[in-house]
Image (cartoon, rainbow, N blue to C red):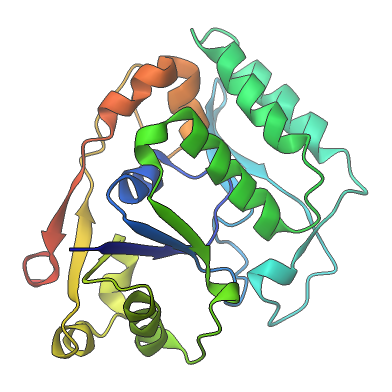
Length: 238
């Protein structure tokens, strides 16, 4: 059995993303698909005293049809320092705020020219902090030389890396050709998000914020809330 997860790169994504990678043998950064405005590739929510706020990376010279790996970060703005200030302010009372800020600063200090490289660096930093969430093998779709599109291409990537199981998030239920995977002997599973609560600041618990929130509040003990399993697509899509 070899489980494959394929996802567009995301900037300091929510805990649910790392619950998927925790269950993956192979993880593929889907970095050569079209960048979508409003996606989580360059932004994520934080929990602040004012409510949820976006931590957004500004982009430069964005063109229609650009692939994620081609989209430039706009370093004409001092957004990195602004992000760190917002993080420090939002989590000033959290028990592990220093660890979170150290991790975040290490990512911001890297000279990433594209949102692809920055998002991947943020994911790598979290894998290093929570080693149990790191897949055995990490690849970039742009380096695999596999053409095509839609479900056919996803399936070809899974087969290329020897996958027997494809694990995906809930959005795929609306477009994935499950029958195609079944015909070719690849089992599709969906992550069964448990959204395990943990102590947070600023009001009622919400799981839909950056993993930086978990780190600031629980530190490395945060690994214990990543308990989600999987469910077969036939059960999930009924």
